[in-house]
Image (cartoon, rainbow, N blue to C red; front, top):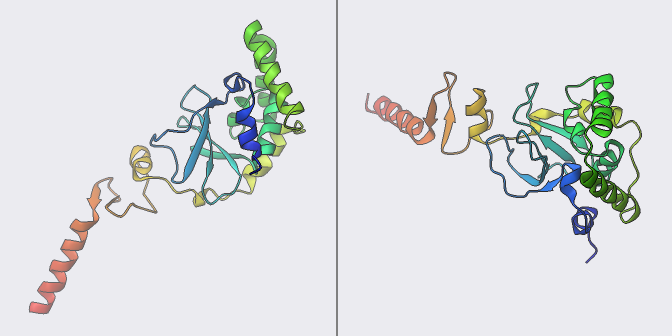
Length: 210
């Protein structure tokens, strides 16, 4: 069976952590959406990268310390575009921050990372990883990564992302899709559905007896 680009990427003999893509596939933190398939972590501030069931090949970034109302933001429509963005920025790190940065601050961030944060060993490993993505996978850098990601995010319907109860409870938000066993009311109280069902049953029974 032919390997997907995703599988070929992680089969490369490179250190993906230097690109901000340390392999991670088992994270059940409160901010992870239902159906999320985590594949990498930035290893800082709980930032994760994932696919989500129902959204095809779209790549998302998860950030629990978000600067807006969403902890999950789309970055690219497929994994090839995502790698193209990584090539352009030389890391996945700046991509996660596009949703709240203006263009000037974004490119300033990239310049700071690429020009000031140097380590000879890491620089060598990073260049080897970027070179392998270009030569062995045939991926090309995305022109204007900021505009590219912004365009993906601009047309995205965030209401389609479904979270677990713990997400809404942690942020104090009403849960539009409560799990079957319980939900949170408007006062933040956890109400178990069997309790509500029991109350309804009593009301119906009493009305019949009258």
